[in-house]
Image (tube, rainbow, N blue to C red; front, side, top):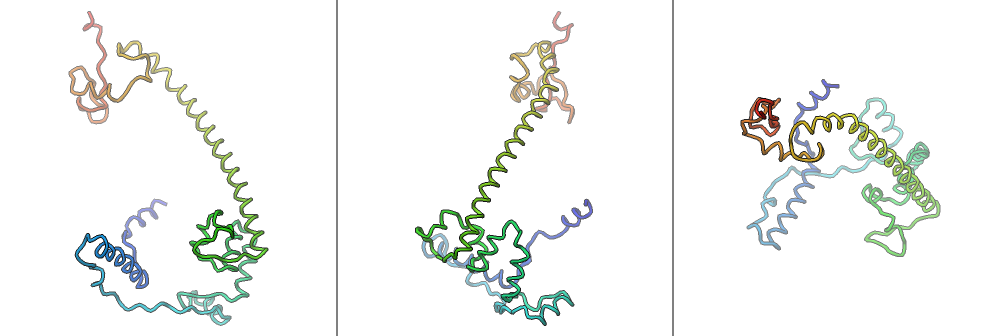
Length: 243
């Protein structure tokens, strides 16, 4: 595992992008700079317009025919970057994920042609036909029943996670109290003999330690052996000094 982490850290941090991603990034940047130039008057020109990129032609989708599937299984390479399932293959996929937790989302994407962002970010408030958004799609009876089932399942899972969270907090609170009982009493027992202000160890603040920095009546820091470190503690009065 450590060897894999070292190898991962040696890899460059830059992201390798293809021509399609480069064109998309240029268009986004050009749109922002054009707004800053024409509307906000923040810059003199849109410099992104002068960037020349290689010609990019979007790939055309290909259908997964039996011959292409056999070839892919033989050599392990896709015939094209964008491949499309046949209706039979789509049905086979839905049958294979029928017991999956996210099956309602897969069903919605297949039968109602939702994009990934739309299916993942669609809130329940926008699923009401009375309040349509920017893009409207109709639901058949089966899809509606699946969505209602998914909503009930979400509520059950939310309650389960809430109970688990409460149990986790209770365990951590009990563990913290046990540690406090284990380490706190010794500090309270030695506190009266230090002749310092405050009623107990809980009244100590980091400012009390910092105020004693540079004093000749200080212990050296246990980390750097310096007398001016913030972790240096004040020296308690010695018996000879008190007399």
